[in-house]
Image (cartoon, rainbow, N blue to C red; front, side, top):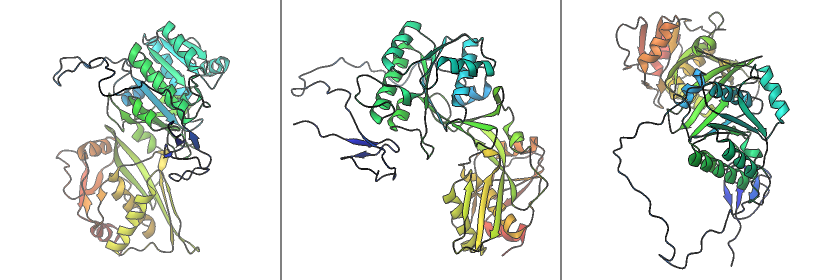
Length: 454
């Protein structure tokens, strides 16, 4: 009796026993597809009937040198990669359509080629002439990058075996198809099988393989999540269409720190590096206004200052609106509940809008105090001091908790001309930073001591 078929959702990766029009896990419609097995596998006739090769085991103590790295010359990209490109690594880059993934990787391939690495760029979405047009626009027409346009993975691997490149860019993994898998390109089975073949090739031949991945409407890389487990590094290219800033964020990196970011600016000549992102995100600040607070955060190993903006306005609707851009909406609801329960500051009948300026996305709990300060400033219509940075975590009891790397945040603030800081009580500020540091033990103290509200 054969094995019963299984079905997987292409949006969230959930498995189902039978097909249905709607996924019970994520609610996506027409996203469930049948999985096709790659092979039946060896038939075993009992324990020990079929023996494989013995695996070589070693101890944890090793004298091996760390993997060599090749720097591209794009400092922001090298920072996110952990210091440069590692041979035989597999990298997955995801991002919204049109955000600049192909532009970034074409520039990176050209830089690595200039650094002495043999680079191959395989496009499954564009013809070679279209890629050449982009290269001319970016000033890369003379870059020694080998270019190809193909979606048949068997032909691509044969070409890579013959060329023996140091780095291969495949744009994108959803367009690749393997003739041994009986399903359409972009399906769960095809994406999983193609990623497995490319990662295996990278480890076997010592070639660094960079895969471009499409994302779903929720911002996750489309296809099975197992692809993210296969590769060594997962990068997300983020940005708002209305802003020229782009953020390259590492969410997984076996060769460097996760959550590291690189900041780029989209120009007519491609992506330009931003050496001082804090100055960029604060460069368009207006005069002091209610609801505007500067948050001193940490992204990976880098301190980053950005402006948090809040607007609180009466609403005629029975259900007030809560709109968030660049932060977690659930955490905003928590901050509003703490302000009401612990400080007696009600937000009923008031619309609340929160925005992180510049298109940046913040996931750090250390932004809690800056958000609460911006909300209080907007509600009381009182401008917060323009030369003060704020950071700290808020507990459900209303107490303020210190965050990590306090001195690094304060040094970055001082470098950009800020003179004061509002931090939780007990923060390790250290002497000689040149800032007036005001420590707050809890939210009620902040409300009464600064805004005089209650």
